[in-house]
Image (cartoon, rainbow, N blue to C red):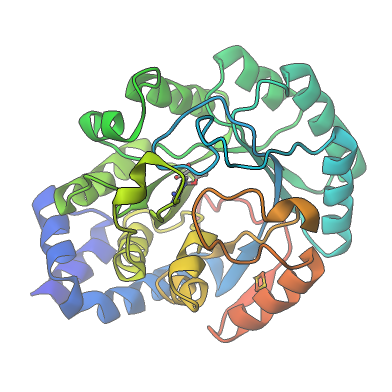
Length: 347
Ligand code: 5AD
Ligand code: FES
């Protein structure tokens, strides 16, 4: 019966909320079949290719206070750092020589970086490496700001929605952040022509299996080009240190469901997944993911961008990480490719 549901999901790329919920509740009995179909669908579009993105974590200052996040403003124990524009550009140069053709600029919401500064960084990045895609992950900004950064040359934007349920959103964030503004940002980014990535944490406090079923309907409605998910992982110096981390097992199942629901989506196997399970990233690829995002930040700041405890790859040089990750991906039978890896609108 579950097999028939999965076959229908593969055929129609859609199920009802109750059908998604049935699969999620009975995942132990159908996960292997789901993963097999998810790999087949991924390979139909992406031919067993896994895209690699160079992540540059340029600042861990953040004005927000999300209850789950280790770099929240209220965490006075976090050791703060900022890269200079020159340092950001030289990370990208190093990444380019290692073969990267997509750079992801990610940081906390750090007001020190103005639109002018981002605009100048993006323009210089694009001038030095015109064959590369620039992905931004800078949090919530105004329409005007998103527009200006798009005009400066940014191609993609990652902004996880964190949860599709407004009441749940309000339990994860303080009252000066709103679900409505997060949705406004996602709408604006789409309207401006960015390739947009959304996403959520699996196993975040107060999340139910019904919420996860709802996530699938939300994704179907938003039609993002990328979806980033990973397990929620406890950070000791946050208000959520009393809760439990999410599991690799449920995250993997959600990856499989996402692949069948949005067949051509760009789907990372995340560092968080590799943190809760030593083989998490490989298992994510085997569940239908097709992107990995190793860290290009300088080694002296890596150990400071800690959204959650026990983050992996904080002690390695970029070059080491690439070699390690390539070896790991090889074990899945997929091949790491270094081109821009744009979203495939058609087969
Ligand atoms: N565990 C797992 N993921 C987290 N993120 C933030 N804090 C945590 C945590 N404790 C995720 C959020 C955010 C992304 C950059 O990292 O989903 O959007
Ligand atoms: Fe960083 Fe393996 S990917 S050490």
